[in-house]
Amino acid sequence: MIEAELAGLVGPVPEAMIYAAKGGKALRAFLALETARLHGVSPQGAAHAAAAIECIHAYSLIHDDLPCMDDDDLRRGQPTVHKRWDEATAVLAGDALQALAFELLGRLECADAAKVDLVLTLAQAAGVRGMVGGQAADIAAETADVPLTLDQIIALQAGKTGALISWAALVGPRMVRADQAALRIYGDCLGLAFQIADDVLDVTGDAVLVGKAVGKDAAAGKATFVSLLGLDGAKRRAEDLVTQACDALSGYGDDAETLKDAARFVTARTH
Ligand code: GRG
Image (tube, rainbow, N blue to C red; front, side, top):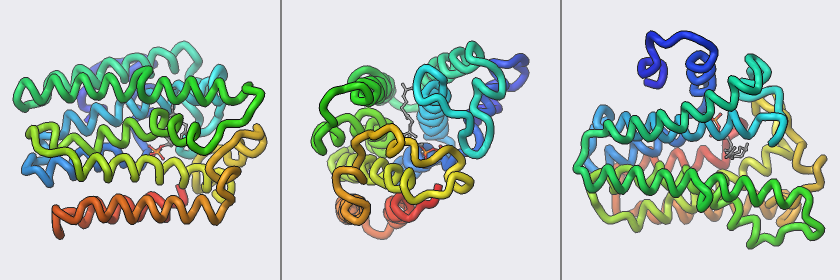
């Protein structure tokens, strides 16, 4: 979809945008489309919301990989955008993906009140109260005198990783102005389980399968779910969260099986 949006544009920035949007698991798009389906919205009807959240995600990965942030050469097994092109292209491609996300939401076909809600809440999830705030806290923690506590890490990750996942899980009820309570629990638990699984993969994962460098957190002496809970404790916590996420969906019956499978995949994944 992002490729189709940029059809006809030439030059390094649109090429880098398409490159960065490809090759991922598309978990956030899947959550948007599946929760839309649960609320009677077709894949076509929710496609712009699914593409919007993947645009924000792709932008965050491009910027996170920059030398001024995590300084990574590989992402999804391929050179990162600033390595494949250069830093200016990486910054601009990230900026343009963020702008494109809101353009896509603006073109979503749903009631105006639902559209405003989706735009507002995505801005909050991506911004200083969400992903950017979490990323800033993570960077600050690297040079702090005292390591973060478990509660502080949970709060940080709820912003850095959780906010976009939670937003994606609420696309369905938001589009039709339905009750959000069950999917809010599902999304919040899934987001935290996802981050714990990421910390576990940083310790146990194979760099080739993960598609990026592993072992960076331990090398940097960072407090993570694994350093605070131990490897088995972290895995158990992630499993408990997946169970909570699945239990929250009981009211949707068999219709929610694919979302439950996605939650189980998050802790079983190798990449
Ligand atoms: C630069 C503002 C800004 C924020 C960056 C998302 C993020 C914040 C940093 C990424 C660092 C990181 C690897 C966090 C762990 C969780 C995460 C977002 C992993 C990547 O998401 P996946 O596994 O990626 O869904 P794919 O490649 O499948 O799309």
